Image 1 (cartoon, rainbow, N blue to C red):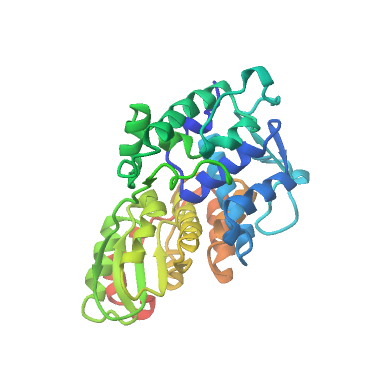
Image 2 (cartoon, helix red, strand yellow):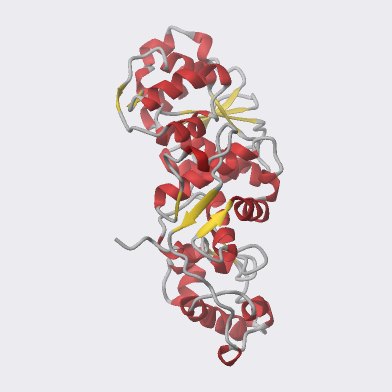
Length: 354
């Protein structure tokens, strides 16, 4: 089976898109050493790379890119990981990279000033085909500022490529690496999906539930006495990784607290969303610790088996006192759905309120 190229990847979190683009722009061969990974991380997400949770953020994004097939991590090879927690790989392998050669002088193309970088970049013929269409758009709109007024990404993509999804795919590839193309140059933006929420009080905390029934339970139980909770939101699974950007529209939020399933997906969603949040100037996403305490008191059910290294990455988002128990659940191939803490249990226990 042929590995997917960056342009074929499913929708990624914004942080993973930036990291993927930076990696593909720097990779001279399929195997990418640790130093290059760190360089790409710093270029793609400078604020996150210098933050106190940078190790967890990088590990989370690398796992995401591994999950969708754009890179391979050295699973099961302990000597190829460092000793930190969560561990980081000494190298990764990008699945769609071939050895690169400098562009031949005879094949140099004429590009607009916005694309000067393309003359010396290592790019494939497919990249140059995409750039030819982008170059034409720059040319045709150079004296038409009204056409460059920002419009949503898929509308601009259709205008340039006659394919509304083309820009979505290109964002995680080499064309959008730091110092190359930007959405601002193309007069476009990614519109995050809307976040469904209910305002309850005057507090400073937004409580987010992964699933709809738990959202309804938390909303109803907090309505009469919200405490610090300003609102309760429905994360809608992985949609929260992008919809978190809309939290900026909710006045007065100083804390974002998340409660989801105790499994690989349920723990990766808030960790990825937290990277996006810090990039947007929002507070990081915290675990709803008391709710996870209650969740871990319930029996687990069959789930997805994960490796020890991935379990360390996933549980790093939880507070230290919960990590070992959660780690054991994941290693055993088990999970606990958040619906285990049902309305009857929560209505009789006020200790879970954020």
